[in-house]
Image: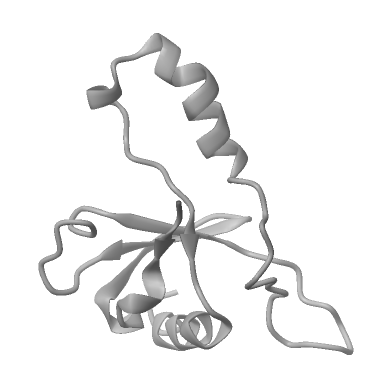
Length: 109
């Protein structure tokens, strides 16, 4: 099951940091049992020169979970108690939602 982050507003997320392949936001929106304390790690994608100026997204694809999530579920959970681990899960987003989040975060980056 993946979380549908598009039920929030991009303004509900605050830029935290970024690296070479991901950018991280924390949830600062209205109180929500499912979202309070949540961070959103968005994978960056290479831009294609001469075609699109935005990262390529396959909104409807059934991409396997992030390798970090798979590793935690298959390996780390065998070594540590579940209450000592962060909750990791995939989240669905849409291109318009990501575009708005990107626009809002430009000044923070």
